[in-house]
Length: 61
Image 1: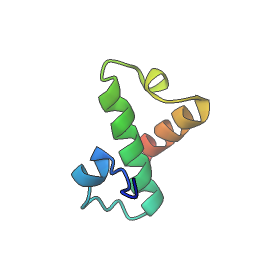
Image 2: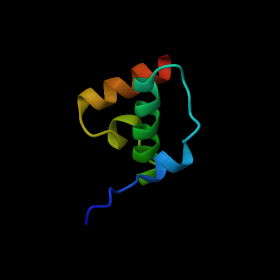
Image 3: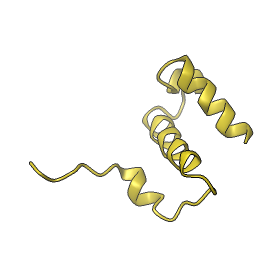
Image 4: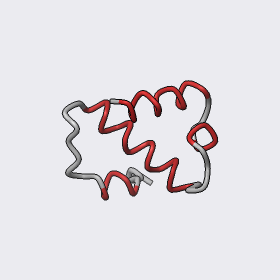
């Protein structure tokens, strides 16, 4: 049980460098959300209003 769970985005985006670790983390979260429900709108894919606002802020960056 001592083994940490690795998210698939950590492997797929291992070389991601957007210039800020917060942007890298947000990109991975968004990819997980969009992959889980590809047909969903951004608000439907996100978990709550704050994550939706963060997604739009990320996309406008």
